[in-house]
Length: 148
Image 1 (cartoon, one colour):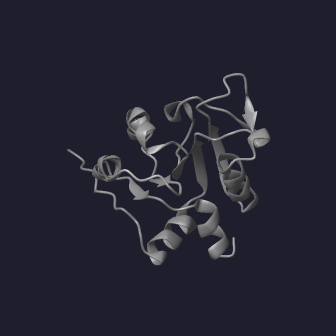
Image 2 (cartoon, rainbow, N blue to C red):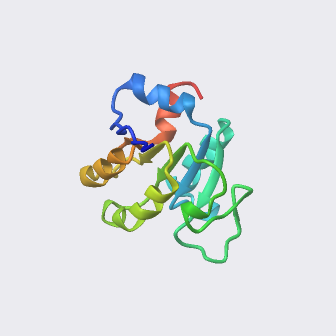
Image 3 (cartoon, helix red, strand yellow):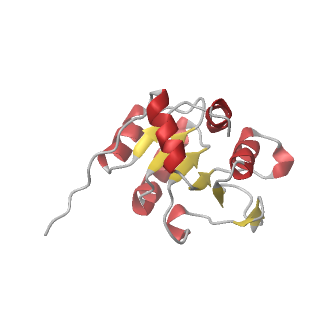
């Protein structure tokens, strides 16, 4: 019996984004930074963690770092044990393609491209594989809007 993947969707409405955040529990953060940077790639996942989400750090830099936010660091999404509900992406649009195979291999339920990150071709490749996508929105802002 052959199984087919139902296509994912690009989520834009408040209702769809709210529903996504409600069904999300475990977030892998691709491109997470360390605390000392005080950059959004650190304080956004820190806020999500304080809001009750499990954060899985997947930094691109800092090869010597073993933990971020008190959690074990993984170098690729496919190395993360267990399922991932969302990949929160902190990478420049020009750097997204280098992560496509890793994201597709891990098959998260969704990919959230942070504020300022949009690539419609990348998004369509994810949705074709059944992964929902949010583009160009800040996870922290959306969590705060919903009182989380």
